[in-house]
Image 1 (cartoon, rainbow, N blue to C red):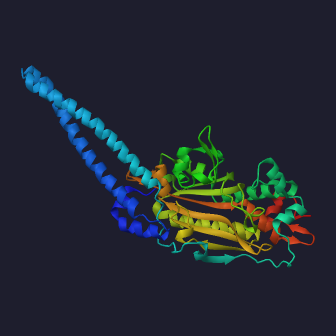
Image 2: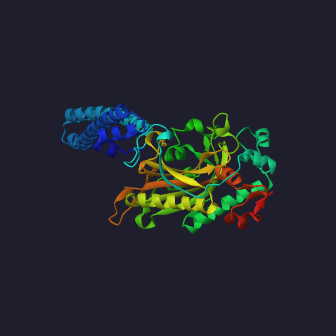
Image 3: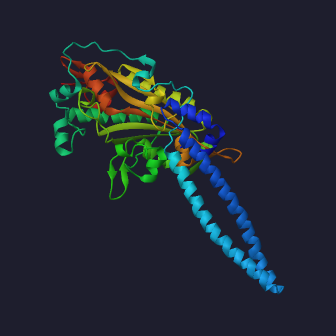
Length: 423
């Protein structure tokens, strides 16, 4: 969340930048400033009363010894009055802190200056394009038909077991899925990311720490009896490893990667845009997470983008990179780049990765900080990215590599699959 220092130093700038996300921040910013001013006034009164209370408490014994019983009684009465007042102030201070936090939790991160204005995906900016475009015949099959033809994925069986959006991978489909996971993890390890195997459920504090709560609570699966949440991405448990942690500056950057299943209730409705693997309630993903000094975070963001691009290049997939406009960005992000791959049979771009810098927004929620050489404490910058999400990668591989003889497996995956064609 935004810090009070950020808001109070230049509230008009905050309001202006949040308008780029389509968020009207005027009232919540004004409310936060007013609440903070009242809180400070209460704290000053509390401090003054505490000083008076200490002075009076110390004087009572001396007054009694001096035989000034009436003055001692007056002092005792004033002490009782101050103690009662302090209880009221303590309650008012606690309420002010809670009210401030509740407002701050519902104010999104401000987009950085590189974020273009715009309201929808049509306003996103294409930054870069690459990869070979496949040349398929007009009767090329979409991945859901290929999956059925070669017995790779059974969508109906998933509906029987759980419901729509929970596919069952079979045979070479399951092996290709596992090959992609291992390939992505190996490449992340080669790039210096320490692999983590996190829990798939998190507590409420973790959800608030990375910003899924309260913003995306309706999109998360909840284990109601235990008040736990199934993770929408490994970003949540991995970033929360550093909640309430003060890192030594020489330990930065922190670079972690993790494979996990991901669970999202907001899979969507019906139609070709959500058919097959295009949008699921459960899917697999390898995530990369970085904790950085603020001055290093944008260089780290470029490194993460290069890493994702290299994966797509090695898989031989056509891709482009989008710089998201303010209206299409997430609640918590300061800047996001989406990677999309071309689905030749569907003739559309499919999102496979988002790479984001959150600057201090998550770190302030998490209290993720570092201590510099002068022993001063600073908030870190947090970043994460999909490297990569599997369903649409699988869809593009199946569609783009189909031939009359079968589906050709990308060369980099063959050591993992043990086969070079699916037929």
